[in-house]
Length: 129
Image (cartoon, rainbow, N blue to C red):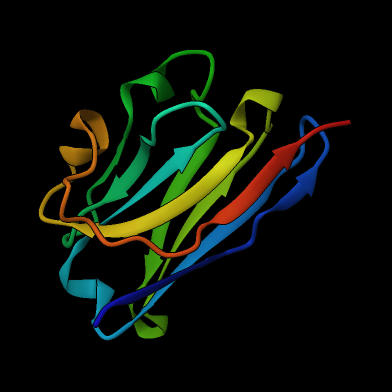
């Protein structure tokens, strides 16, 4: 059974940075697309970013708007079976629980995670002064 573990969240002031980490037991992330999603209180879970099995990076269309533009970088370390999400210039609206999961392709970052997706506990990101 696949078990995802997200970490790296925390309380950060506006303008600060965090690097989220996704690891998994039970499978090698290197063979999959891995997506980051987030869910704020009262809102649906939304896609944030994805890295394909061939390391092509994609971001939710909102990342090209002011809210996320240029502030996110997704990467992976295959030797460590880990995927990272670097977030810079954080804003209060970035506050959410962040989750990672494997995907068949990165289009799910835009259209929403499949019902069959597996989720870990997530990591809380709180941006507040």
